[in-house]
Length: 112
Length: 111
Image 1 (cartoon, rainbow over the protein chains, first blue to last red):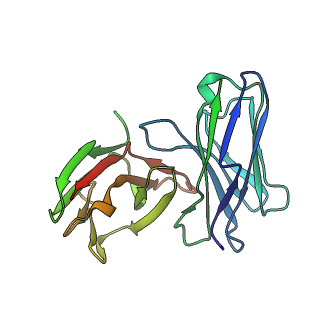
Image 2: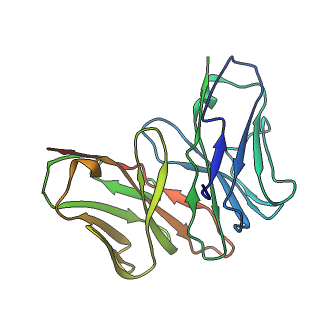
């Protein structure tokens, strides 16, 4: 499978715990995006990487959120001290210079 | 007011009907995307367009840049078309890469 993959697909955690999600983009894509989607809403932009550089961050990305893409390939999104409001689907997408974004299956986070 | 508005929010139709989903946006854009999301979350890109019209199978997408409006049409609809359809735009702001999404249209096609 050469599409975008995300791991884990589901995560249930208790409030206050830290969680980390991984995204593996399509191998030749140099751009990687993280989005968050709450129930019944469209996705919202969180952050964007071009290669290993994080070029844009949303105001939604509080200081409890951090994203990395250390070698310009896979990316991780960490949420520290999770809150119930963090419960959502976290989507990763990748693209090349042609701009069309290809989405992964998402990681559904439930904070109890 | 959201930058991207879709209508209707929910649409139920019978198999075979012609379906239209509308998207209006308020910002200058470089491209507009139509996406399909099935239960379970996976998003599939259907179209990316910046002018005119594109067709793929039973799906047709049109865009009117002057009116800041796009439509997604499904001909001969089928129950497997049941999904959430999302419109997303890329801003004209220099260097902008992020997509801004509408809230989605939930389509249900009954047999």
